[in-house]
Image (tube, rainbow, N blue to C red; front, side, top):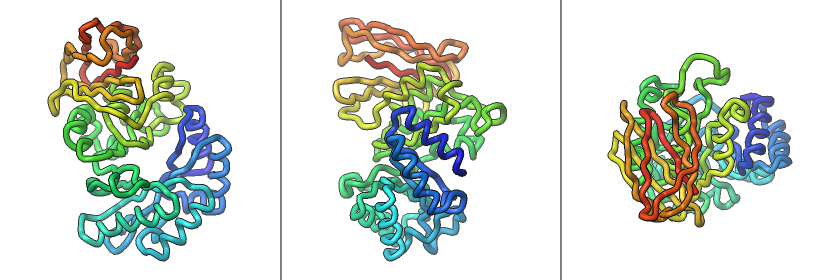
Length: 334
């Protein structure tokens, strides 16, 4: 969290054509309020809007990251939100909620209600499962409530079981409500230097697939500035166009803990995505009547795990054969 890196990320969001950037924890100390106003203006000049991170605080939360003591009382919250609106912030990511006690559940709704008065969107992180808030508050964007992408860095178990958990989320967590996962990591190593250390164990095709399988109306994708040149060009081109809102979702195939395949429609365009959590390839004969007789782009992996983009034709009955390599995935779209 520093000025120079945040500028690089704003430039990345602009190059990708993304609407928003999340400026995460510790910005209050490492950048400061005055410089943050300048940074927001810079982002807006690049056609990028800003989400800012906040600590939820309160007696239930002693997490040290700031800004602190801004969201837990009505007076402080409204004062902060007035400033946020005036400087052009579009949304907040509020983190570190402790438990599901009544006072904590009230805090969630108080934050949503006050933020709505100031035209601010809300993402909850370090939080409980959503309880129908998307039907109540028009400014509610989504909740983490899952071992999200940051845990790939913090937990060896999560890194080693990434594909297993990805095969579960479409059946379990994401059926409940929006899931702000923050995925699609294209760094080979899960750190800033991207040279050694925690190696990503899943393929690029797997990462692209999770961008479709996991649903949240605003996804803070975990791309990094170096990905513009060191990731496969086909992957970056795909990520420039990926939707995050869907008009229709269709279950295609899968078994929790083994593999999962979903089809989602944005407008008149279908995306079919799947992941394999097993140790051997999964060979599938998929039935896709919505794409019958059409040529489709298929993002998949070679056996050496390198991303492969091919143009295939689905037969007139809607059938197509797909093989998913271990710890891998695929995306099919017309």
